Image (cartoon, rainbow, N blue to C red; front, side):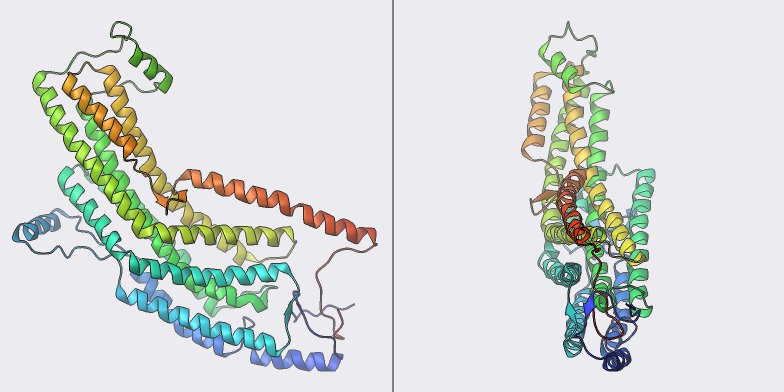
Length: 473
């Protein structure tokens, strides 16, 4: 049996003569482009390529706050004069227009793809094809939902940025080294996103990707067009979450300055034991604060409590602005991983494109989860500082009550980011994803063994269906 190298291995043609099959192949190749799509579809997607590049360039500066001292002074002057503060550029209306145009082109292209498939009587005979089509179509649909959610949550995004700017103006504890570190963090994120998204999109639109899933190239095209917009929302969320963690770090630094140095490396069990015992049993009790210093510490504690409450409100704005987008992106990512896992288990050969897709998911989601985890760590560190300060210091009753109220506020108003309350955006998300994929792997590992055993019992091997030169499978 001779296998035709020109026909994708996962599509079956109706049985016909060798001559008619060869003629159909020639006609189909003339009507289809490099990606296995008829000529109308690549033309439309090539028109969309400049829009993709422009959208990527717009994404390089998703938020442009007033970070310099002169801009902050101008903002204060405008506030005193009662004028608005035009210092925030969260998203551009043109970006939404680009998304609508590109998604419209995807829809039209999909119509021609399915029409060409129907005319040639191409039928799917593998569950991998169904999953791949579902993954590509879901990715395009998720992009539409992300843009709709972006339009509805723009006000919350602006409120979160303005809140961060207000807190930065009040604290003024952003040292040059910390500002430089924050800028490097943002620059690395944006450079990574721009490089991966633009190169990946242009590579899929202009160059042929040799793959056995040639007829499914529409899914890869839809992915390459829609994924940059989803990555843009992820990067905006990561940038603002990182700024939120920096503000929490400044609060923690002020707490350490107020309460003095505390012993590091103390376990919660030791702290609990010392809190139950008296001063005589606690050799690390430090001398009490000076009355003037303690009065200043009382005022600072109240100020930090107010700042923490603002951080909690800003975190709420941030979740309202990006929670739906992050939920859709996480679900789409999980589906892509399970689909790729099934393809690997089914022993279907994939090219480097599949590895690029998986690597892109890992890098982008790692940045998002790392930013959220930084917020969670700083919030937990705040509670540890308060607890150690209460244990190691001899404080007045008023200051002790104020610090205890502060600790109670940390419990009642936790600062932790989540995707619509369904999953936390920190490293705990990785544990849940690993558990889900592992369960899926354990279930799917049983099917190849069963099918392989049944095939070997009949003296044959389980192989994909190929199209022969004579039109028989």
